[in-house]
Length: 524
Image (cartoon, rainbow, N blue to C red; front, side, top):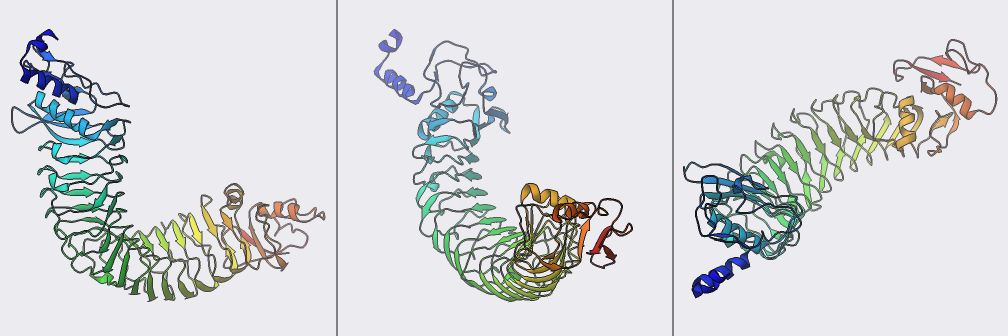
């Protein structure tokens, strides 16, 4: 302290400044391990961070061994490339103090070049001053630091920056992307509070990923002059408008999500880029016209177009052979639905809440289909359910006009949803596994049909009404439990052997094409 007081005014001023930054300024040299070789240093505070344990001490080993830091060799023999990752550590810090501390640390270790900084999922706060970020930085993520809300000047970013993720930080103000670094390849700003229009015609020429989901932007957006290198574009959950023209999208674009906006007019899906794999265009109520799926890109895996005003008949023939998800719910689509030529790769098919009509053939569905949602249409007549894919875990045929036998004996016991409600089914086939599953998960909905008596032994909570006496079909031992649970009279013969061979009193058996193998169709 005496030495400091006896020093000149300039040195005293420098010491006070460094103390305010919480840095450790070295007045000596370091050996090859990065350890101080002299005791002539001014020791100051720890890093301006709380809530997490950082052993960042310039007098303890090499910074490359500190918590959250790692280094790699540089092409230049006298420098090393350093990455800092303290994401999800619960750190609390004032942004400017933290960045100032880092700059001072780099000055103390001139052989280190910071190329990557990840402080995501912490509690950094205060205004973000980007000019203080080191010029060597190539990768920056401050995702999910909700107290960083302030305007951001993107033109002050390092020229070398390639990756920028400032999502879920609640930044505010207009969004000006015209001054982004020319080398930027990845930009994610989703979950902020920007406002006003955004110009996408002056983005960096090499940009590959652009995510502006739920950012508050609005106005007409021009998609005709996007960077040719773009492969991923997410503008969903905003208030963007105008017409959609797909024929000028980048040819290599693979992912496109424009859902929950105010786009309007006709959409031509035959003009999608050939590399497209995922298209999501939901909850854009002013989109209209017809849905032509005859010339979709060969590599398309997902097409989700729901809650629009698209109308007319559609054909399911010729869909891309690798398609996995086809979701067209809540539109005005009509006509018949031929589901016998769907791609074998399809996992999810959702045609719910449209105006499809006619018969329904479910005997040739893709074998790996997991979800089939056809509720709220006008499908009519009998439907064969005994040949449903074994992988099916969600089936909804509710709110149609289907009749006859509902044979669910082959549906997986792991099914999470079985909804046949509000049709005109009269006969029911269930496996004991489905009954057991329904008793525990309440995943079975049969209400609002014209069930004939007697019904199989359904869980008490279902309480389905029935009328008349008609043929029933039950799997395995469930007929025996049905008899003992429903009738108050004593049917002693309904206790032993097989009902068709014993025979049981009042039982007559017959064959049926709709009954699965091993299932007795019975007249009582």
